[in-house]
Amino acid sequence: MTENLKTAIIVGSTGLIGTHLLERLITDERYGKIVLLSRRRHILESPKIETIITDFSSDQVLKQSIIGDEVFCCLGTTINKAGSKDNFKKIDLHLPLIIAEYAVANKVRGFYLVSSLGASTSTLNFYLKTKGQLEKALQDLNIERLAIFRPSLLLGKRSEHRFGESIGGFVFPMFNPFLLGPLKKYRPIQAHAVAAAMINVANSDRIQSIYESDEI
Image (cartoon, rainbow, N blue to C red; front, top):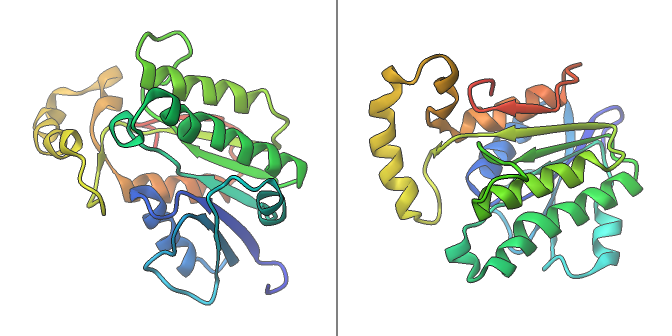
């Protein structure tokens, strides 16, 4: 790695935000190495990229791989795709938390998480409650720099089709003129904007820990 350049670790690089994040980091001169922890190789290629193919079950692989300056965690699925609530929690709660624990153990300075608008430990919505539980667990860890991003409905072309998001991406933008003031955070947001915000915060002196969709 080139001296003084940073190493970024991306978990969830093949998803919508993760792909935009990777595209930006490849061209960002502040980063000399990008470690991808993934179940499959990404279609994007660069001399900067080091891909660790893993099913995330090996503690040894995770311990040896999560070494660098910043972790960008873009993991996320749906209950339908996961197949059950238990499997959903494994992907959206337990796995990100394990990644964060290894990051802390290896003295990775920053951890930047994609969560969801409405995430809360007190909600009755299972999806949002799980996201809130992850946020709370991360805040309880001794992470030097933690930033949580809560985007609204994501806009952008996915490699996988999500029917609900496709419909929402068509309908919800029509309501944007009416979503003002406190309602502004409910406007749909482009995935590339979330990726850009994550990198900007990682390279700033901001100490804010949670960013709602309108702040992103």
